Image 1: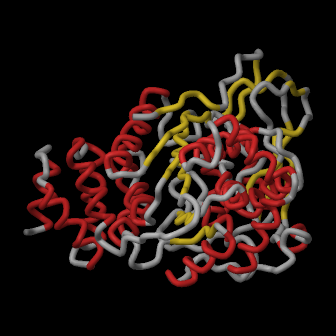
Image 2: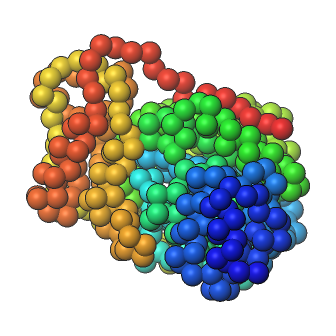
Length: 434
């Protein structure tokens, strides 16, 4: 086959055969397909779609482009994936909490994509921590402590690794077909028995409307279940950052607050809901509600924090991170409070704009392979419904220098609208099953 001919067919709206898609995925993994051709494929798929059969074919082909793991554990092998949001650091809380409750969690995670943060980038804000590990170490960590949050090794869905990096810098992130294949190729290659998907919906999500979020959720659930992995999706609100912060080290700090016992905010609520679904799928709880309380208990009693600390140390981070995280996390040298010029209720937040502000501060990538500044970002972000007076703090900007802080100020100020009080969106909007 020929990449040029496949791209021309996709460009012209033709339905690619399974053989053509498999050939292209193998070319991504081997290097026979160039970056330019990968970008052209992503754009043509974004514009014209692959169709249901093509979506399944790409998922399977990228899964099978590398090694597919299998497990023999005394408990269920479970995992979670989010479609990407701002201030969404639930994975750092959920993996150790699930492990405390009897699950085994080989969480193969990704980096920032577009305006959204990446779990690996957040973890690597911890000094010394390395997320690239061998399969032997991944297996040892999961067997010993029940969880490991790591990057995909070179032989886990290598075709997706190529395409993922291309999508980040070519404006092709939002394709349902490409999102489905990307997420599930890695998750299915990890040998999971149960998967919960957190499909974000709103101004900070790739899926801005309830209709598109539900379409993505159904695509993911149908494809994963058809591949033999029990799967549930929750559509969750992303009209505002989930955590009080956006930025790698700042979000780790927010997680540590939950580990320290603050289990009532939105970040903890979504974590518990996702974990409850997984414990029910794995037969470790009598239902999602009971499972959610098990997750909350592991966060409240310190057991999840202890397990998190063991995982951090195993990945090369400080052995005393849980006890002394404030001293270990990096701090930005310039911190600027952005003050409200008028009064009113916070009635709208352009959450994608906040995410892009973090990227432009250096907390994300504008070009593939760029280095990230783990300390920069936004903190103490107001929430929808908050009532403010002139001079009240909208948020804090953490920047590398005063000039960067001043530049970010105008971007974030324009992203927050004050006015009359408006109804608040539901945190968890819908549950999707087959």
